[in-house]
Image (cartoon, rainbow, N blue to C red; front, side):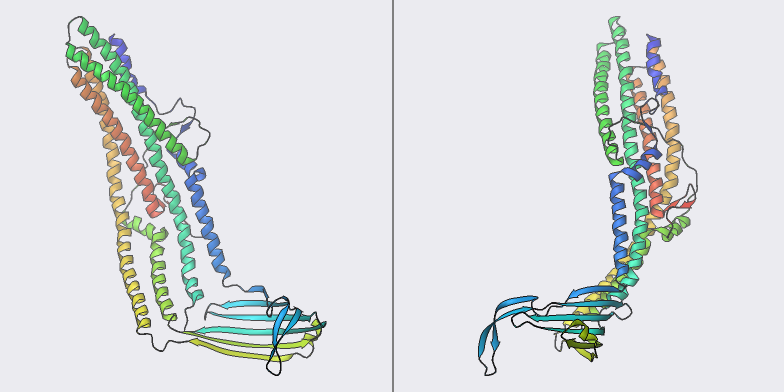
Length: 485
């Protein structure tokens, strides 16, 4: 009997993490799958593509465009009775049957420096009175036109300042999102690993308690133990069976969550390998801050937000007045055929000034400008606080990192000591030196030490990938995780 319980109790030392599983995943395997096939990765990739095309759309705002624009004078086709005023002032309803198409071909070039638009146009209009079969062409062979708003908000100017920063910010944000996926992968990985360890602990304890119950029952039968101790052991055995069922359910739930997160769809079983090799490297606060300022999207976002606040002030200032100048020069003509438009065309000159200036607005413009300035001041204070929080988050993570590394060494040693203590306790129990209560205490301490070690590993690796996300720098491999193209 003693040999049997020793064999069962010592089986913990032979517990492995997935060496006989059909699929064995290391932490690196889980991270790789999450960063290449998970649903959150696909969402991240889609956002990256979306931001790329938004940037390409912005760039086209500064390129010339060729447009074909309809230019119908009234209706393209009109067959109806229409009131026509006669020379004596009376109105006579006449039936009209007319075809009057028109088209304008324009080459337009925005002027980003001033916010105006320069265009070269050719316009053609055709008139066909079907009733009396008369036709005529009218058109502008060539027309150069400039429209220039005065004192207005120049969107192109501000976009040129903001959009490149926004695009660079999106690329850095993508790199940070990949590290966040890695961090979440570590969380999912250790959730399964902890459930896996709990399941193994529960099965091990069930086997132990079953054997102890048989030993205690034999002692009761020969009168060397009390009924109270036998019932205590039996109750512990029943709890062990419940713990095994709960641990198996927790393992299934955690495995399903990780399977969903990393994008496994074929339902294959897997086991996880314990990542007990800890990378050794030094992290200083100065280095962490330096790399974060060099690579993080949040840092350049501070600059973008300041420019956007200035843009809001400029936009409020530009809305106070609405003044625009239009000037055009070209050649136009009329004729019975299209070719007649090019025969001795006449000079065409157009100039126009439009304005909408409030004379009395009861302080409306002043209130609008004061609001814009107040918003800018508030934004400056918020950004200043965000910059402090930006650095504080990194400093806290760096200071916590070394403590987590030390915690692993402590919990690893505690796990070994608790295991050895339990072996001593179970041997003393077998020879009757301690009772079942003390053995259970040693068993609980052994289980808690194992769980604490796994939790320490989880905390370290999550902090490791969180530090990578906060700095976009791999301190272990000594390389940047983002390079500006």
